[in-house]
Each structure stands twice: as C-alpha cells, then as structure tokens.
Image (cartoon, rainbow, N blue to C red; front, side, top):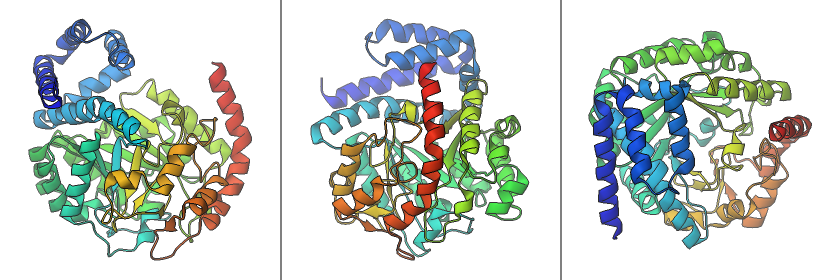
Length: 447
C-alpha cells in the first residue's frame, strides 16, 4: 500500500472517530475505544490504548482533562486531535523512527525555532536576551524548515524567542500554509488581543503557552510590574473564545514554593489552562543570575509536587528536568527536539548555544548529522540516573568536551560564552545535587 493511500485511510478513520465522539463524548468515548480495539492490530499503540482505556473506565483526572478539551471551539479541537494526537504523536513518531534508523541520526518530535530575537520585555535570567534584538527568520525560512521537517515525520513546531507574537501575521500565515501541523508559542501574553483570538479561531492550529512564574509577587519580581494581571487578562480572553492554551513556568530558588503549590495548579486550571510545562532555571549567559538555581531540597519539592498533581488534577503537567525517566534521558540534540535561533543556527538545545551549522547553508537532515548533533546521538543518555540527564546542568564535565571534540562554536553574538565558563556555574550545583539525585532515583526504582 502506498504511503499516500495509507495516509488518506488513516485520516478518514480519524475524522470518522472524531465525528462519532463529537455529539456525546461521555457516552461515546467508551464505545470508540471498543471499536479501536476491535479493528486495530493488537500490537499497535498498546501502551497508549491501555492508558486511554484506563482513564475512561476509572473516569480519573485524565478523563476529566479529555472532557475539558470539549470546551474548545470545535474547529480548534478537531485540529488539535488531528494534528497533535494523530499527526505528531502517532503517525509522525512512526515516520521519525523509520527515518532515524535509515539515516543513522536523531529525528526530532518537535522543532523549536525563534521567529525573532526581538522582545517587548526583558525578564531576569532570560537566556533569549543574550541573542540581541535584531535577528529574524524570514517567512520563507520558517516555511522551508517546516516543509523539510514534515518530510522527516515532524509535525510539531514550537516558537520561542524573543517574543514570537511580535511576528503575529507571519505566524498565522504559516498556520495556513501547514494546516497538518500543530504550532505552539511560548509567549509573555501581553500581545494577545481580540483580533488575534479571531485569527487563532480561524486557523485552528495555533496554541499559546503563557509564561507565568507563580503568583503576582513572584511573577512580577522577575517579569515586570503588572505582567501577572496582563497574563490573566489574556487567559480570560482565550477561555471566553474556547481557545486552548497552557502555561510555561521556569522554577527558580525564588518561586518554588509558589509553583509547587496546589493553589497554583488550581489557579491555572480555573483560568482554563490545559497543560503546564515546568523548566528548571539554567544559568545561560555571562551575566546569568546563578542565585536563581534551586537547591537540592527545592528540586525534590518540585519532583514530588509534579507527581502528586499529575495523578490528581485535570491538567497535563511535565517537568523537563525531573521527568527524563519517561523519555530515557536528555531529549536534546534532535532526540526529541532541536532549536533553531533567529539567525538560523541549528543548536542541540534551547539552552546550549553551540553549533556547527546554519539552516541557511544546510538541510535540516544534514544539520542533524552535524558533529555536535552526532555527539548527542552517540552520547545519550548522558547518565543512567534519569534525574541527572543534562550534559550541562548535572554532568558539567561532558558539554565542554563535546564542544571541543566537534569544533562547535558559540552562537551568542552579543556576549560569547565558552562552555567552560558556562559549566563552571553548574559544577557546584551538580556536586550538591548528585547525592540527592542518587537517593531519590534509587527510591523511585525500588517502588
């Protein structure tokens, strides 16, 4: 069977399933799973099907999250189910695995890219500020990256920056050009307005993740006076229009108590957020605020909070530093994602600003085969303890060696930083975290 015919049949099946559930999701979801089990080969997506079936049978928090998705505007909900759940997570993952085996390199589930380095804010400890404010990927650049990515099986594209919504019109145009992809943007939320909500409703495949660093005092101490209220105004506008959104939270030594609390989870759920992604503070840049690095006790607090609320709250939560066990370690270097900055440099990680190649000069596939990316491919996982996944934060001896051996160069054009300087800021952290990480990891494996 040709790939085009197979894809057409899969898309038809997905559309029929969505139509079936749409009228009465609570009644029809269990029936749909019975049909899936009846007509799907037994060895296809076994763990995913079991998880969905368990959620439906127990009517647990994951089931409640699915029902919350039916509060989305219908066009947006259909695009999410088709593009994110099917194209990116099922069909795309299969293509990525096939391509990775054939080409002998990592193929990413998602591509992060910076449409612009410009931002209307300057938050304390923001790594993006190190790039400067005059760089942009053109509309043609972004289109080319996505076209190449979908050929590799990548249907998920995430905008960072800078502030991506400085480029609103181009981002919406990309959604129109690639209706089979799902687009997410990390945004400070201050540029969301009625006109943009209408555009998101029209295209259906664009989702913002609002940066929120805790309650008002903690958030505004890092992001600026009045920003907390502006983010909540933006979330209220999104919810009123039936538009999906999530939260992006960087946890630091200053805000851990806020963002690990049940009150914080309840607040963002009530505001309408469907997911929350937590990022450990990284001391990137010559002037990084190292005092924002969490203590071992604070990191354990986040570890426990995520696991408690993930099993009890109707919101999808992920901690990219503490959840490496679910993805087998570091996800950078194209193993699950890569980063392309606003000048086109292809970097293994949004926090690791070293590269051998620029997307203006090589293909996306060739970038994935470049020396620094192959060093990631050949070196992952960097530690058997999944609470020590990163070659910079928890294993600071690894990154300088990889950069030296591959000849990668620093891509911070404002204030270049050597990997030795960067990792000197994390070596004390790693030393203090290691015994705690070993203890917590041993306990988790014994359960």
